[in-house]
Image 1 (cartoon, chains in turn brown, yellow):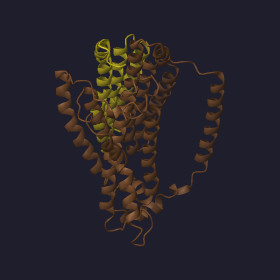
Image 2 (cartoon, each protein chain N blue to C red):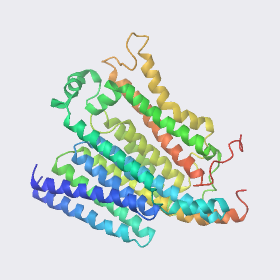
Image 3 (cartoon, rainbow over the protein chains, first blue to last red):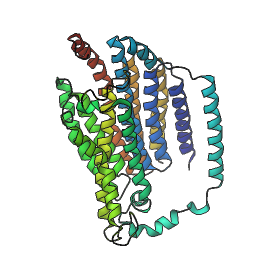
Length: 333
Length: 97
């Protein structure tokens, strides 16, 4: 490692700390959101410096792309709530756009948790096993995994159970949003589409490109950094782009179609895993000859479902309109 | 890393650090958003340079994803603003009761 490398890494690390601090200390939530987007970008750069392009890819898609839209759109929803001028939402719009200082008790709790976390982290690094722990075992089993990229082999084959549950976590998060804001976002038609010519051109150019890149990243997972999650995020972003631009592509879907899309990845993963049981193998154990095909099936289903889930996050939160609280749950039933 | 890549990535990173001042000072929301976009563009530049320098071809894919998704924030921002006027108009007709 040369001096210039160290200088670059040092600058990047300093920038990260500065961005994180500004994102936390910004007086207004909008400013904090912008700093957070910039933080996501710098973080993706940092992951590449730590030789983890898989994580960098996920961070680029989630941290810099999707989270930014969610934050900016939620803030716009807060402002709308204020413009509505209702007594209830006036109060909450004011709270919404101005960042409030944290109470002293919370500060103390956060500081204590930070110290404990740092201690655990340092201990973990000091106790790091020689020779990279399970790396050698995973490397030896690579020929049976059905894919050529070690990260995909670990995520979808050796450690498939964990990944399956992670898909479930996303589903749980969606259920949480359902409980908090109801599913009215799916049932409400978008306002009549008046699409700006410039945005129209942009969408017609970008959405096919996004779908193409999403497929490319999915396929790439077999041999290089990429895979279901990153691919799904790009798909979700394409859906969100359509939605923001005012296209009604997903506005007309019935609720059962949304529900199917949300559970699809989890269900296919479960079905593929359970299919191994009658053959006398254990749950999620693919036969070595056809493992690649099974992984591709699972990954495709998960990518579609993840894209759908992220779009649903956006649609639900957007329809919740910031802060009128939960809508009447049985208004539309 | 070759000397060219070192100088260029360091220069771009210094640019990012300098851009922080604009996010901090604003003054308008659009200024801050443009700075975030500048962050993105600079980040893509750095990634493409690093992809050659390290060499780590996968970084080009990261740059590709960056580029594709950067536009979303701008669109959310502008739609949020124009959306307000439209909403206000529809509320005037008693849209949401």
